[in-house]
Structure formats: C-alpha cells, structure tokens
Image (cartoon, rainbow, N blue to C red; front, side):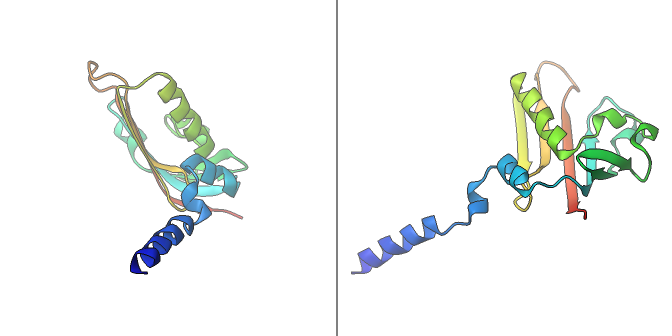
Length: 141
C-alpha cells in the first residue's frame, strides 16, 4: 500500500509541473509575444572602451531599440552591438553555427530571455571572448 502511494505521488509530481517549465527559453519568450519592454544590457569583452561596456538601460518598442540610456541608439557608442531579445537569440544562433569551443547560456525562468551568454570561439586566441548580461526586463504597455 505504501509503495503504491509513493508511486502515485511521484507520478503526480512529474506530471503536475507547469507548462512554463516544459518550454525552452526561446519557446517561453516567443509564447509571451513581448515586443515592447525595458531592460539593462551589458557587453563584456576586451575589444571596446569602458563607456561602451558599462551597463545600458534599453527601451524596446515594437521589437526595435528606441532608446539607449535615454538617447537615440545612433547617439550611443557601439549602438550596433546592443540587441533586442529577438536579436540576441539570432546572435546566439549565429555563434552556435560557428561551433564555439566553449559557451554558456542562462535563461530567465520568468520570461525565457537569455539573461547571460558567453562565447569563447577559440581557446588559442586571447581576448576574443564576448558575453552579454541582461537583467531587469520589464514589459511595457
């Protein structure tokens, strides 16, 4: 009797997980259909000046970056290296297609966006690593 109870308990536990837990990060992000949001994004690498790699407050409207630290993107140094979440997923795909030697990606459990990604394309090349930190994502509208 006890064995049967334990078996039923584990079966219920396994199948009672939320649908969100079953989705990959990208699937969760896409299922939420967020096109306007704010976030903080930081790039870490050895290739840019300090003002470029400091955290940036980014406003995205209709899947396009509208403001970086309160300014039009073209007024920000290196603006072309800051991405919407959809573009971050494309960046990840591109890097994975290039077969990195090492990479690490962590996804937000709430929204599914990558809140940390790191790529080292070759251990034989110094200082070519790049990482992004994304936090404080808040839907707008």
